[in-house]
Length: 231
Image 1: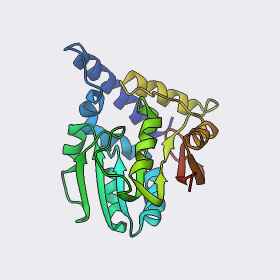
Image 2 (image 1 turned 45 degrees about the vertical axis):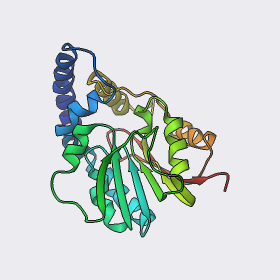
Image 3 (image 1 turned 120 degrees about the vertical axis):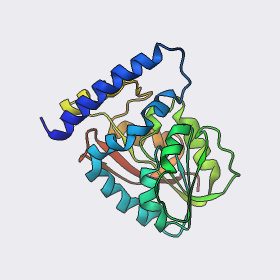
């Protein structure tokens, strides 16, 4: 078994036990699991460093010179690596502990973090040239609503960048990883395969102008860039 998989097994095992204990103390808000894991989130992401480096390159190229909004930024890992290419970047999340982690350390001067619910944004219509939502749609209970909000705040001709983990039923590691994450309290509200994810984007009014399945990670990811199909 690869070193990364061993680390994931250990981390998820400890996380599942700790989160289960925390749940015994009472009912949790929807953001509870993300607030709980915020201090260790970047350590989990280290397991997929090669994948993220590839995404940074692609995202920087697409948001160059653009006013950019990120939804579900988590600890700001992606934002801190790509914001310097943008004109301005606002990175948002609905878990306060994630934002607290994001605000630690240095970041580009054109990047700021703020609270937002991806399904009910406070930004005005036609506010951004690019919207980024990475590895989040599958854990949002109403991902179609998040996509509708992304469309609303995008200016005409704007681009949606929506990389997302997908399920490969034939891959043992993918199945094991998904089960471990579920046991740790990270529930996948939707489980798409690669074709299903692209179809979901198209069904919700997006023209997918570029997509590719990247497999250098614990779970395969479809990197997708879209524009409003109505334009």
